[in-house]
Length: 298
Image 1 (cartoon, one colour):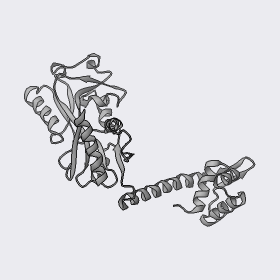
Image 2: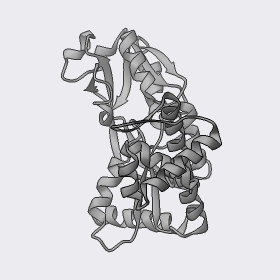
Image 3: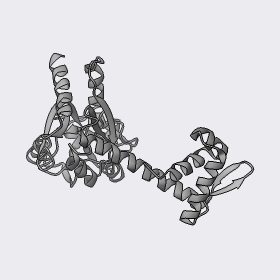
């Protein structure tokens, strides 16, 4: 996809030698050197220092190398995206994953459901849990990412999307390892009396709205601190730094090494499932149907 001289440059940089690059590319050493000379002349930058031990990138060459690797990756992604749109890779299922919205529950299910008879090919696409990035992910469902796994989103996020539950995660309480409550095996409402508790603002999910209502009406001695955005790693950092208690999920117990996740004396659980576009491709719909049939058969 990139200019052949750029590809030759990358190979020489990777191999650290014109000779090794020529062997790998099945070209003569002279041909490889001429391509690099031509490239350096065209862009007006010396990319390599030629030594008795091989070809060593100059500082400018190192910078150029990092940038062209990004260009090559972007080119590969552009081709993959175009093929997907053109329908040439009809059975690719692009599953997003992040620290807090891991695709592992779905992949574990798929490992059980797929006996080798299906032609789906899974591509894992990482994303960031920050609020802005998460909104972009919801906007890109059915375009750049086919599905993600997690708790159901807000009404705005779920507009035009479908949700199929896979399992439920238990709501727990996270505290710093330095917090007095960290030594307990489990917590009760009485333990939380007088504590500052991080909880997502009302309207994020019915389960946590019900939790908030119970706290406000029955346990007003717990001081609620609103999280303005969905969970991301910065919230876990704030919990540890400020000494707050925080509503969390059992599946996130290992997210932050300085926090302890404790079961709480309540019955709140969050459904976890697949989120995908209501206009998903035939392949994605077929994939979801396989998962549904496997769950119903268990």
